[in-house]
Length: 163
Image (spheres, rainbow, N blue to C red):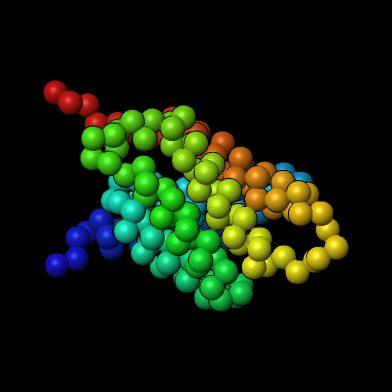
């Protein structure tokens, strides 16, 4: 039987994708944009586990590639690796610690660097640019921006109180 949170994670993808495509480009700073889909993926990878994060990364990446018309497989592979990496931080004993805003932002930063690096590797065709510059502009800066947004989101994330 399929659990309701599995369906919810796929249903939530579509409004986040709509925001990513329409609103997020307005938030760009010198053509650097945050990745809200990555933030959602990292959250589910931490709460549900590494295998779930990898499968959800496949689904998110595949749907993103199909809907936006980007190179099929580039975002998919990047999101699989990002979900797999974030899933390392899924532990029943430490899950609440990883959802603390600063820890969550660092996990988003790590997953974002991996996601952006892999996605840039497949989508960048210019061979005459400096590899350090490409990594800095297309991988590190978007990951830092996504981590900053994730930090702001998790500060307002409601926590359960144990009574």
